[in-house]
Length: 308
Image (cartoon, rainbow, N blue to C red; front, top):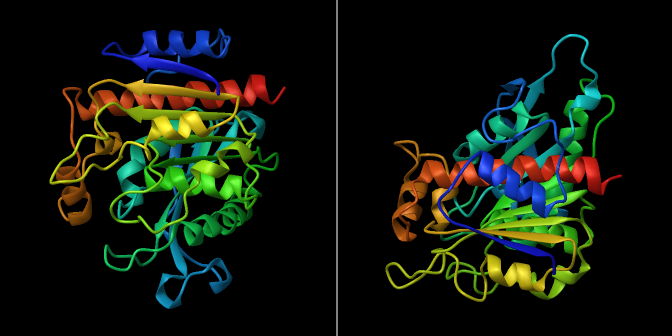
């Protein structure tokens, strides 16, 4: 295992300094709280068809994908793009619920692939193994779309929240993807919706890529008779099952769904899931700011120090 950092109620520069000390200093040039130096642009949605060899069936063999990319000023080398992150959502959560993460990432030179399954319901959920098999196709799509714009395409990072974090770890542990690094936002191995799915925890030792796990203190608190990130399946279990180099950051007084951007008025599944998950005294905006600052600082650390 690696380093564990418990996080209370401070924010911003303090977090950057803590992460820098944990990571032996990311760089003396930046403090990663707040937007970075680049503007960004987001592509229109594309419906990507994937083969049934992934394990999908019929209408579920598709993903809705968009790219959020840093807009480099004239004269800037494409090597200023430090990473390409594939951002996988939680169960029944629209990819737009993570727009602020993609925007923050791109502002710091991290091109981001946002996606969600093309067709899925609570009563016809896709298996985690099938979704893990989607990731190589998403990466191939991103490389095709970004290749002309970013000739020196950097390595791929996997980022995910909840189920999206679990399938990212599963893809890496199974050898489907060989990421430069992986970040899990409050990962969940199994919940009441997917008890029959394969567990990734026994496979975590197969992952050698640097890993950051950000967890919520209250994810395992029961609401309506169940918790959204149950003990034994939550971020703590991922950290305990992982190998070095791994960092863990726990956000006190935070709940599992507080990592998300505000739900749109018509996003019923998002609104329902937020009601089903405990929330703490931290505001959603604070939880998201901590997670985004941690992510950007860590990605830059990995791209600069671990890679070299």
